[in-house]
Length: 236
Ligand code: ATP
Image (tube, rainbow, N blue to C red; front, side, top):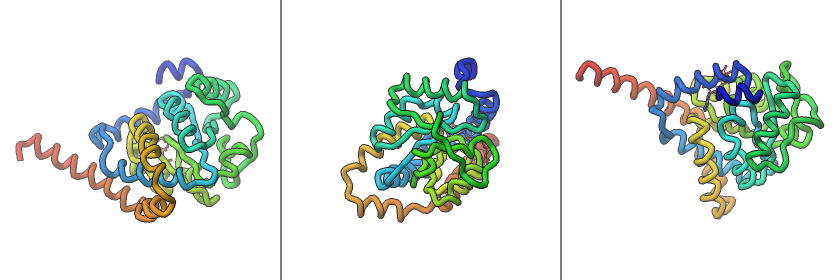
């Protein structure tokens, strides 16, 4: 991450967000738990059913999982778009280069932009051939305002966020509460596994997934885990 900061891929605020994530990773035991597996299953089915899926990439994602982003985009034939909270052209270029070095052939987000309503930061700028027309948007380490705006625009949002209490987690259509470094490779694997299923089965998987219930499982897991750890400490 420090290297990404030096290479202009990340801004200092990205390091703070990363630290917040690490804290929640501790709380879930630094492992992909059942609630994350369930969300990954629903996310893979959603991506396979999507008409025009787009992966929204920021500096943290490019620094951590550039190769997996490219692999996922090849597997589900979806676009990759750079979308930054702290947008500046030098950073967009650096991130584009990192994605291209990881094998990306097409990266959107540096030109042909339009704006999405109800957002006032730089992230309201989206690609006309990307997020603007997408039916499904996959994002990670995103802030709540933007997630809410995308959901209001009737996009299905798949979020990867270690914090089950964040506004992004609460408003996304599918929230994968896991570290993006573990979740994205598992998502690629799941897409490969589900590819042979017929549409009806995929629709069934999506229908059976309840995001609020799944988030509640994540919160309950953390709470039970902390209770067990504290009891271990005092020998109960
Ligand atoms: P919100 O606006 O949604 O309430 P926030 O203000 O924390 O949340 P950001 O700082 O933009 O929003 O989001 C960063 C999010 O990414 C945090 O919830 C953090 O827990 C999460 N995060 C950080 N690192 C990782 C990681 N490696 N994998 C998954 N999620 C991560």
